[in-house]
Amino acid sequence: MSDQESRVEERWRTASELPPEVLAVLRKPDRAINPVTIVATVDPDGCPRTAPFGSLRAITPGLLRFACNRYHDTYANLCRDGRAMVAFLAPPNISVSIQGRARVVREQMDCDEYHAVVEIDVEEVKNDMIRAPGSAIASPIELFIPEQHIGWFLSAIGEIEEM
Image (cartoon, rainbow, N blue to C red; front, top):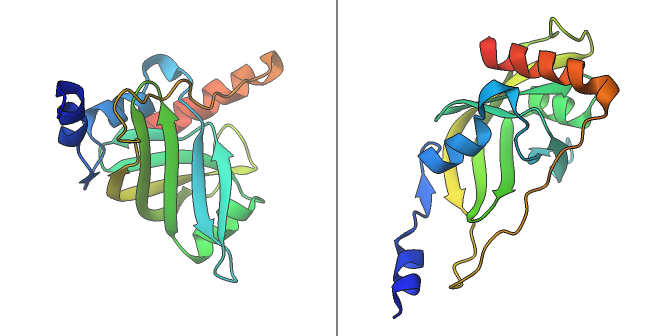
């Protein structure tokens, strides 16, 4: 086994909270934009439903928080059934899925009457990185915010982080 293959094998597989390298990606300073996360919920008929979010932040290794429009399917699903899964990619070697329980902690954001703040208690973090030697994530899914919405986005992130 090569040295690189050995290092791949040493990577963690599951954790009960966000490992430091994952926490760093989801907890950027100065309200910097995180990679887009995909939040999966369960529809009333039991089918999985996914949606991208650009506001998700790690508050602690065991707590995630994001803004969600109260008229979005994700919001309705989380209010009815708090099970949630969050997935994201970050170069060069972070590919994780985070399982947890969600709850609404603020029905209406101060900065936006249509958005609520949702928290997810982390239950398990799974390392989904390909274990092939030399494999790497080339790019994250990135969010582009039009100039006219930058103020709203920064206000929402500030509110999420400072609660």
